[in-house]
Length: 339
View 1: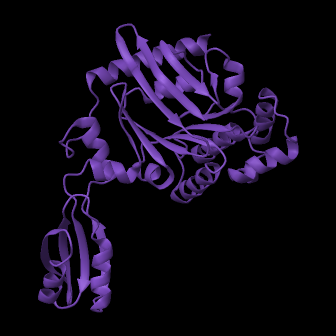
View 2 (view 1 turned 90 degrees about the vertical axis):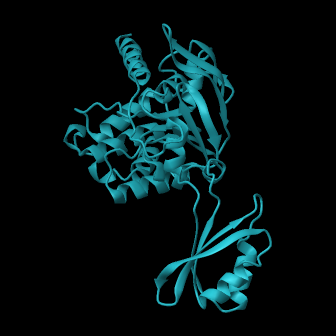
View 3 (view 1 turned 45 degrees about the horizontal axis):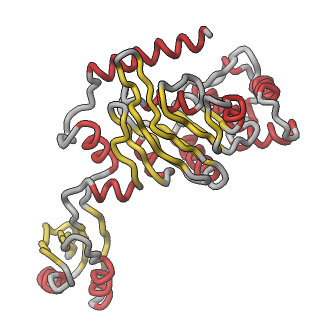
């Protein structure tokens, strides 16, 4: 598992990460979200030992990444946003090199074959990496993270550059890996986070701004808790029946969407789930319910509301603070590369 305790990173007087804490349990997939300059990449770099923290702890399977970095890193498979590839090597040669670098003890041939098949790169294993498309390079980067079968996977934008079919395949793979691994997944594609992750953390201005499941985030940050039901049948009879549902605050019929089919806006008192009684009524009267959806905020709207305030329609812009944080992070990373 991963445990983060009051993790802080300062660049001079700039607080890129300011005392964040969270845990990720075994077999859990955590979505890690944040706008540019929020401290997301800095946090992931501290978790992997790429940069050191100013204070606080990051524990990987109980091992402090600063006190015993070699042991802690042995538990981690890391895919940075820009995969660390040696482009003059063949795919197979590169993975062989990573296998030796990680001092992997698994059967070499069988393990590398399994990793290449999982990431769908077996067909290009003898090609030079520099001649591959961006999507294939991304999958080679994911393959190197899987070598050694580490219990913790930290994946930063794993589907960048992939086509829709490849994105779906990688999502399926991540969900499969999440059954036996602890996974932190960072992505700007919110539908991807929603489809794959068990919980979500949203970081903003270096602090944890939200931490919950997708459903709870959408529910808790919505002021509108209506249900929209599309039902076929006599309009007035349906309205009358729906208004008798226990806990209903109001019911209003909207315009005719199809011949004989109307949409009905329903709102119940807080804490009341009217879906079961709604189903019983339409089933009892043989009124086909063609659709039922929530009018609550989407994950994208929740993200914008948390990171920008209540004005969710405003365009996403980088603040001066975000830009300064990004520049400071870049300088620190350059120092790490030079070292």
